[in-house]
Amino acid sequence: MSSTSFQFKRYDLSEDRSLRAWSAADELLVSSSTETDLTSKTIGIYGDRFGYLSCNLSAYQPLVVTTNKSQELAITANLKANQLTETEFFHPSESLNNPLNVVFIKMPKSIDLFQLYLAHTSANSNDEVQVTCGFMTRHFTKSWIKIAEAYFEDVTQSRAVKKARVLSLKGKKKDVPSIELKSIAFNGQEYKQYGGVFSSNHIDYATQYFLQHVDVSSTPNTLLDLASGNGVIGSEIHKKCPDATVHLLDDSYLAVASAKLNVVGDKINHHYQGDVSNFESEMFDMIVSNPPFHFEHDINIQIPLTLFKGCHRILKSGGNFQLVGNTHLNYKVHLEKLFARVNILAQDEKFVVYQCVK
Ligand SMILES: C[S@@+](CC[C@H](N)C(=O)[O-])C[C@H]1O[C@@H](n2cnc3c(N)ncnc32)[C@H](O)[C@@H]1O
Picture (cartoon, rainbow, N blue to C red):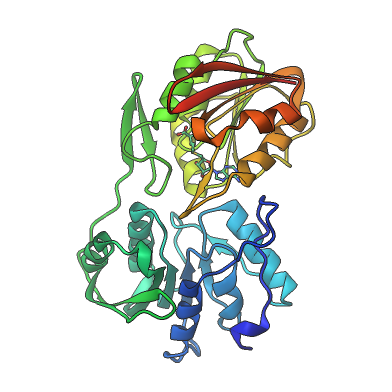
């Protein structure tokens, strides 16, 4: 079946149904896949955000390596909607059962994540593996070549088609760099995190601002750190409220795996989830968040707004939701539609900390 026969939707939390679920880089990856005979090859797919690659290559039963829960839900929904066989997912911290022969990578924005994909490919492939990485030309950075050359002898770049290109990698190297966990010292704790997790060199400045101003004087019994990343917000508040039951939730598998290294204890619960639908209504005394609004190369405020609606549902009456936002995002107008009271706890030219009471 040709790629044009399939229908794709994003199936994310955004209400804007006009947003496309693929780009010219995905199309170029699929058209370049026809240059190789894929019959009886083990194919790997990395970075397929909404399922365009998984659907188009479904006939070859590819091994699909994912990093996000919302990505897995979208791929499954698009496979189902196109009457294709559903697939299981692998994470880049797990080994594959079969060595890969051919790999397609939709280039991630994070350089660290690209390196993690190559390290995973390298450890889970035969020597002849061929890797094709698709990207929009405007996103190109020379660092990709440097990283690709650390893992492969032969790295070539295609000509542009509809402003997209591919990098082709061949000749797997034997001695390749190993992937180290990142470590960030903050407030007396070494926070560990996998490559590709939010803010890998320092604790994010919005998060630091939030932690200076968050108000925990109500001593919550049940606390949710929504979009927890490496878990720093949940961890720092847990130190102030050691008796609280703390839940940490993130859409990124690598974020949750990192938070599990940083926040441990009997009353700590980690969730690999891209929304709050798994929680009962009125479950939390307090929710804290530095919510996401960057998604790869896009800014999409609708996703945090949908998360805010969910926060209202799972918060107890009288409970409070505290969050930090970049000043220009002006979350206040949206929060005031949902919550009885919205206070500003702190504000400077870059960030605002809100306290919303249900
Ligand atoms: C701005 S970062 C904050 C991370 C961490 N709380 C901190 O302060 O360092 C936002 C986080 O939201 C996560 N995220 C993105 N979409 C999400 C969703 N739909 N549900 C939950 N988490 C999401 C990202 O993986 C990222 O870790």
